Amino acid sequence: MRLLFWVAVLFGGAVGLALFTQFNQSNVVLFYPPYRVEMSLNLTLALLLLAFFIVWTVLSTFRHLSEMPKRAAAYRERSRMSKAQAAMRESIENLFAGRFARAERAAHEAQAWPEQAQTAALVGARAAHRMQESERRDAWMAQVTDPEREQARLVSMAELLVDARDAEGALATIAQLQEKGGRQIHVQRIALRAHQHLKNWSEVLRLARSLEKRNALHPVLALRLKQMAVEAMLEERRHDAEALFHFWRSLTADERHAVRIAELGARYFSSLGKQNEARRIVEEALKVNWDSRLVQRYADCAEPGKALPQIQQAEKWLVDHPTDADLYYTLGVLCLGEQLWGKAQSNFERTLKYADRDAQRRICIRAHLALARLFEETDRAEDAQRHYREGAMLAA
Figure 1: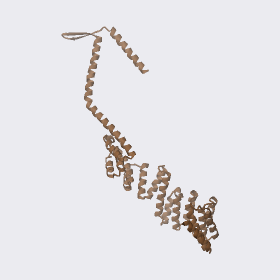
Figure 2 (figure 1 turned 90 degrees about the vertical axis):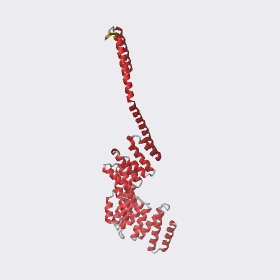
Figure 3 (figure 1 turned 45 degrees about the vertical axis):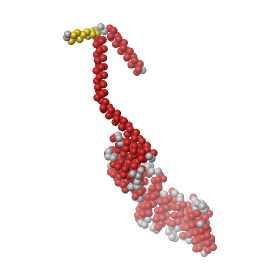
Figure 4 (figure 1 turned 120 degrees about the vertical axis):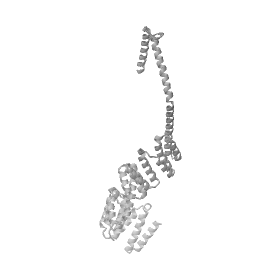
């Protein structure tokens, strides 16, 4: 539609010009003594138009000629920028592809354009780090001086340092970053790795909790890190009942109910003579996670001569777990401690009945040894010898 409009305008103008020249009888007279020039108005207008185009062409040509050096410089700059951008893309692609030497060379070429020179230095630093060239890595990082790229430099340097197992250097770099207000999740991940290398378990636990709350760690990894930290911190406090109790109360319910943590806590409390606390730990954990390790640890939570409440609790569990060999073994140990010989024998024999001899070989051996000791206590030497032999055969 627009084309038709301009075609109509063009034809209309042509018709108007033709009519103007046909019916225009005017003349133009120029006096320049002693000369007199007389022309038609149409010719005069045509000459003026021609003169305008000639002057415009001359001026445009002069302008283009005067700007040619500048245009040539701009062309060279665009060419250099295009080559530098291509080198930058090549450097990044080679870095991801594992061709680190090529990535570093391309980063050098990418610095031909000053606007991306410091970004290319960050890529070059990562490539040098992957080749274990720490001096070249630091030299690349030293080229990043722009305040707008300071955060990128610090985060990259912290990550590379912790990857090189320089945890203290990484934490020092993170401290500089945090002074400038940088508290991203990625920085916390780097700090978590650094504290893990340094075995700063309190910080590992804090950061693992924080990252798990933000869904920034896989639940399995978060659980494993928390278990490692809690186990180490329990180990540090295993000889101090007050410190152990205070730390245990600081754990979350999910952490206290984790099998490994609960089993370890119960063991340490039992070794300090805090059987009631150990018993409560195991009972609470078993409500959430029924596990053979906790069931077997329950027998260690009994005070000599005061195991009847635990025996009653174990018998309640049998309602829900009537074929659990570990539970029968634990119940047998508790009954043996209370010198309930008949109930102890019955439970140990049920242990052997329900235990899988291939998958639960250890519990079978322990049950045979427990029966052998029981029969020795009740003056049944022949039965004791038989169970010693069966236990030895299983162990072999």
